Length: 329
View 1 (tube, rainbow, N blue to C red):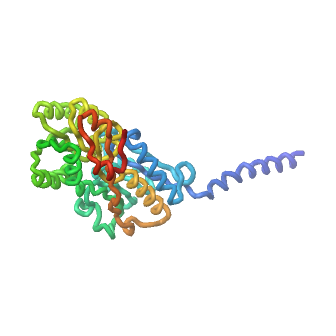
View 2: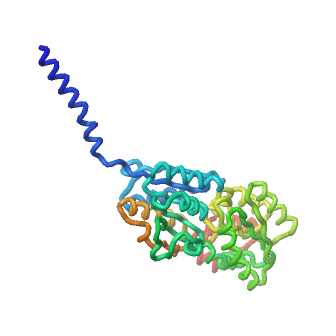
View 3: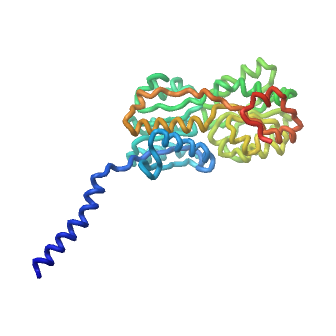
């Protein structure tokens, strides 16, 4: 009887060990680090596009890949610490999104973990990669070419608000690279169109309020909002104040217009997020960022809110209606 009991005990112990042994043989699920200077609700649609890209590359979150998210909640100065935290977790790849500041934070935090970025300006000029075709190092990603379309944005704003002569340009001085890229293109374009430009700085919600107080006091005719993750996170405040002060305004991204802004023109951010999802998946399968060319955005969207235009007393020209990717009624 004692021998039989010992045999059953041994058999039970072996059976309990089998699932542990089997699970130990399964490879650990790879982990992606996701860094963004804003908050999840700001880029919800873009986040879905990122997951679509991952799925195209063969990865589904919770199935065969995990993601650790780090959001700076609009406080860009937190990015270096958040990037360092992702590195300490030894993630397999970092998706660095939302701003060049996030890309610089991850570049400073690691020279070995692959990084896939989204930036507004030329990453070669910024010093993030060696070249577009051969990035070298551990970074690659997408350039939204935001600076290159500044003149076009200004031209479209004038077509929609032909009476404008004095334009307020709202910039975030904390976002140095985007501000420099915007002004480098905008100031000569404005001179060529015979427009006067007044630069207004804002890095906080109160400073945005103060900027609109200046627009009202100076009776400026229109507003040109520079690309900045902070402004995207405050898009409800910006579009509300623009409507309240009856100021025609141009933005970089369609989500401003969806929030009640007049018009936007810029690269498809959802396309960019989908692309870095694809790149992150390819890296998980063994591709090296040094061999993955930086992609330049090729699709630019013109979105117009016709309801806001009517509220401002503006008539949307037939030409703009015909060329717009979307007219919101």
